[in-house]
Length: 192
Image (cartoon, rainbow, N blue to C red; front, side, top):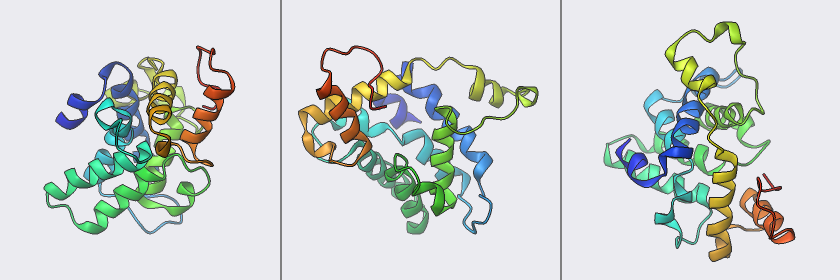
């Protein structure tokens, strides 16, 4: 948590990362998949999945997803986590913006992708009558804090400075293209 708290702006990133972590637990293990993500590895993948958007990593010439995965891999390795689990976290983080791929891989990869989708409301949350624990309150009732705008802006700002961060055909590339198509637009990036 210290790496997360020291690197990302808490106002927009903290709650969504916690919410993604909690949501990912519902899809761990996933139907038809043999892999089950170890909870501590899944938690690190969820909490750090967007850390590559932090200004600390502006000059790293990789997509934010890959930067995030590399940061998490170093952290997990420093705590003696087995390489297979580190690889699962790395794949989950690097593929979490790849629709149709991550959902099919199972384990940590699918769990993180669906957790993020649930947080962005493109995957169903639990029915409101089931929201009765503190975790559920955090997960579904804390404010969104405009994470969509903050994340889209952070990805674009980095990629405009360093084009290698937004290759064609990627989600960061879509965001940059939308920004360049309408540079005066001040709302939520239309590529989001």
